[in-house]
Length: 118
Image 1 (cartoon, rainbow, N blue to C red):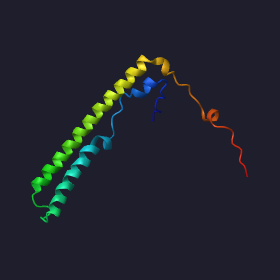
Image 2 (cartoon, rainbow, N blue to C red; image 1 turned 45 degrees about the vertical axis):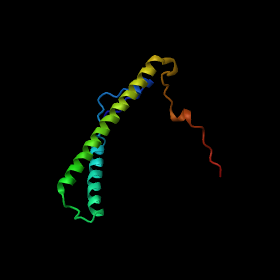
Image 3 (cartoon, rainbow, N blue to C red; image 1 turned 135 degrees about the vertical axis):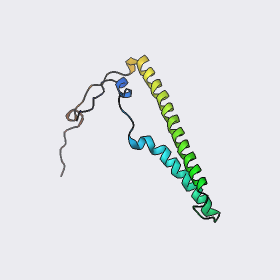
Image 4 (cartoon, one colour; image 1 turned 60 degrees about the horizontal axis):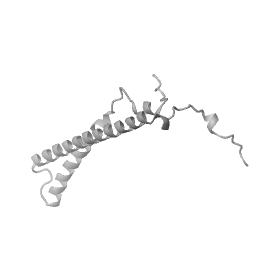
């Protein structure tokens, strides 16, 4: 297995080519909101003292609507994060003096010598 590349500048931290979202990240929004839609319609039937699984078309429609809302919200969030990352990249590109390259540190340089007190 190939070790991940260590970023040498702040601009490299925002550049992630070839990384795709995982399975959970892809489908969490539609599944969560679809489940919320189904739960809402089932609870509405339960509160009004109707048979819970009567009117299946309502359950299917509310689940589909919830899944669509979850998908839309996920797309909107991704677009918002892309704009945010573009602003960050542009700021880092225009102000390189505020973001010097990283110098690698080892733990032995960071930690102080430890002496146990008993």
